[in-house]
Amino acid sequence: MSQVQTGLDRLLNEPDLQKKYPGKIGYLCHSASVTAQLEHGLIAMKRVFGDRLVKIFGPQHGFVTDVQDNMVESDHYTHPYFKLPIYSLYSETRIPTDEMLEGLNHIFVDLQDVGTRIYTYIYTMTLLQEACQKKGIQIVILDRPNPIDANTMEGNILELDYASFVGRHELPVRHALTMAEVALMNKKFWNAKDSDTSIIEMKNYKRSMSFEDTKLPWVMPSPNLSTIEAAYTFVGTVLFEGTNISEGRGTTRSLEIIGHPKIEPFSFHDHLKKVFKEVDLTGFVLRPTLFLPTFQKHKGTPCGGYQIHVTDRKTFEPWRLCQYLCKEFYHELGSEFKWKEPPYEYEFHKSPVDLVNGTDKLRHWVEKNGSESDYRAIMTPNQDKFKSQRQEILIYGN
Image 1 (cartoon, rainbow, N blue to C red):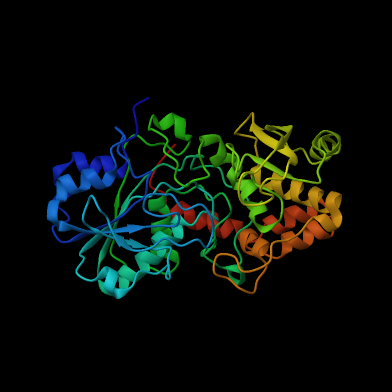
Image 2: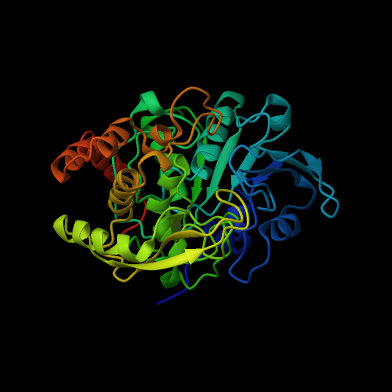
């Protein structure tokens, strides 16, 4: 199996592609914007485009991917080495201003996504796409793999009443799209129908690939996603951002570990195994553990919980698993369980967990100890519409 060539590698290696973009250039990137040889894309882009590369943009977590938490903003600054302005699109604004866009003809988007609706890079891209549409600036997506495969879909479709920066569009939780395909969805169906959107597709990429299959190097796309395994579990464990259950931040396996100081993991595990058997949740092992977060939730307090070990990626349903875990934690912990209070991702009134879920129905399902058929009913609406739209814009085959 040949190594996948990302959009960035193709642009750097194909002079005919470079000639298509003759004007002033901006570049939206982060620490994972690397070549197959692990050279940062900004170094390579500067070598190819020289003084025509004039502005750099960074997403949530910053251009250098050093900022840990939600609503912790990155500043604008001039880079001491590259001598270029770095504009943060996770600052006082998530939408690029006229000043940021002034003088640009093309903006290249080169971000490593993780295939989950709640991950914000796709919204940084679509907001940029919409702003460029108004200014007549061409946006160029340098496509990268969906690391958890681009076939498997899971989870409910976002209800637009619960739109936020962790969910702008009517997507399922695990959306099975690449960055470029999300941009095409925005152009065809959502908010960027008049945008000048150009795609530099990957070569040798197949939808069925997990990240290891691409033979590309893994670089953390955000500070707490250190492993490919975490990209799979994140689809579900991100739910716990809306609760006081630790999602393992402050440990070395963040977003693979979950827990709470009042959980005794071994005895509770006996109960959980019965629940999982009843609803046929498979493809993983929960390993009881104790952990000590060094920052964020329950800092310095031992937590009982579980590391989620994925044993079969084909049958693993991380969203359904974590909804069931949330329900069981809620009823086991009683008053010790808390839903996170606003604000969350710049929304100051709605429940954070509802924003993560893209609906209030799942919170009510947890609280009422709902059934599997109730859960399935929440998952069903608008799935056929999404699948039909998705089919129209797919770039890659299997």
